[in-house]
Amino acid sequence: MSARIAVLADIHGNVWALDAVLADARSQGAEEILNLGDTFWGPLRPRETWERLRSEPRITSVSGNQDRQTLEAPAGTEDCGAEARQRLAALPFAAVHPDGIRLCHGSPRSDSEYLLEDIRSGAPRLRPAASVAEALEGVSHPLVVCGHTHIPRLFEFAPGRLVVNPGS
Image 1 (tube, rainbow, N blue to C red):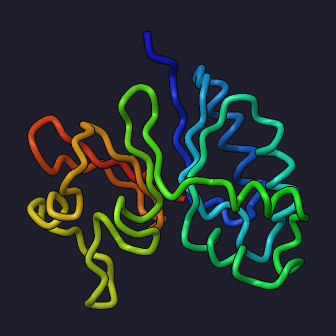
Image 2 (image 1 turned 90 degrees about the vertical axis):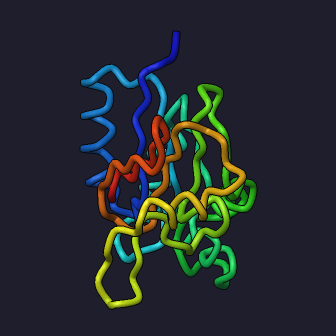
């Protein structure tokens, strides 16, 4: 039997929101957490966010575009410490959960690609199903979870195939 899973993304150092989300996930029986990246980057509390996530026993994380940018910035830019930087450096770009869930931040191709939205107009507009399917070419998992946009969405791009973005 599969575990109850909580999915979160785009924490951006907001430890207060993270505490609320973790409390809600626990109250609903979540046994496992999937973190879709962009964890520390931001002006709030990156070190406290790191401490909170480090204490979580069952968390699977992938790297986001701003996690990558954190590593490219000089040490100390995001006040998380050396251990957090090492952990970020070790995160995979994408992962597959044992239940067959594909995890990515932006899309399976790029941590900065918008999987569900087209932003060329300056406003996020839902991409057509064929465009989403093209971005997921070669990905056979029935469920893909992504972040990056901060917009919660559940999108069926093909029969029985879903993309879920939990928002931020």
